[in-house]
Amino acid sequence: MQRSDPSTDTIDPAGNLSSIKEEIEKALSEAGRAAGAVTVTAVSKQHDATRIVPLLEAGHRVFGENRVQEAAGKWPRLRRQYTDIELRFVGPLQSNKAAEAVALFDVIETVDRPKIAAALAREFAAQGRRPHLLVQINTGEEPQKAGVLPGAADAFIKQCRSEFGLEIAGLMCIPPANEAPAPHFAFLAKIAKRQGLEQLSMGMSADYAVAVRLGATHIRVGAAIFGARIKR
Image (cartoon, rainbow, N blue to C red):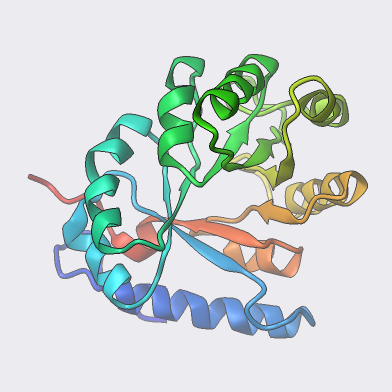
């Protein structure tokens, strides 16, 4: 597959995404899964409208951001023109940003501790808005990484539901960079099945084909679509 060189500004985001979607459909077919079973979240962090608009013009509508402040600075304007965008928050969430996150995002993928769950529940009640929620699992138990530890996942999901009244739509993970991703994806799928959760956000630019084969419903792709950050 040919993609634009991310070291230059001759980036073709729409063409890159089209190639990725072709690869995903091939992986779905090989895994015996239904066509169209995976949604690509185009992670547009650190990219502005010059690279986002080509995807919007091509019909893509699902995007991810990892900073609330950055997203607030660019997406309200884009949404006035493209009203059916789905914006997913894929970065670590601080409780003091919960109000902005609930107001701005349609999906929050990184619920990982009671303090965040409580803050989101308060904002749901205050704003009358309920973005879909995913729980992030730290499958590699990495101390520097966000996410609930696997051994606490079931109890935390139960707490979100019973104590905070939150509906959990699925799970998300980011495997350790120095380990094979497949065991982590399979483990996440096992937890999701046990909890009756449908959404599995797993797989990024380097490993999305593996994630597709192991049941991903959403993959998060940034650099392979947008290239390197635009220098201003």
